[in-house]
Amino acid sequence: MTDTPKTPGQEPEQLLHLVIGGELRHLDAPVFRDLSKIDFVGAFPNYGEAKKAWKAKAQATVDNAHMRYFILHAHRMIDPRGDAH
Image (cartoon, rainbow, N blue to C red; front, side):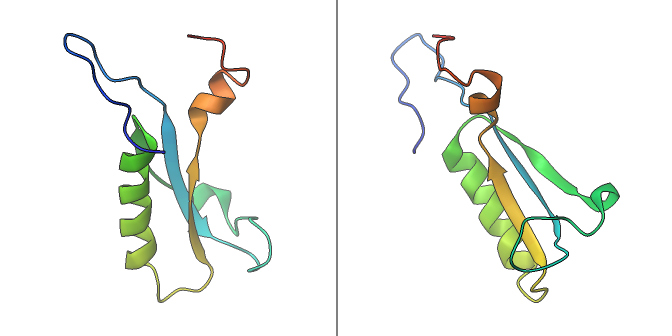
C-alpha cells in the first residue's frame, strides 16, 4: 500500500493506521508483557506514513529481542466491509 493519490481540489483518502509496540512475553506470540507499558507511537493517515514510524521505532529498539512494534490497519476495524465510500 502506498499513499492514495490526490486529485486537484480533493484531499487524499485517509486510511487510518495505528503504530503500537511493547515488550513481548515470548518471541513466538504477540502477547505483551505489561499492557500498561504499551508504546502508542501514533495514528497515521496511510500505510506509508505508519511504516516510516514503525521502522524508526523498530530500529531504535533492535537491541531488545522482546520489543516489537506493529502496524494496525484501523480503517479495516472501523469499516470492515469497506462500504463507507
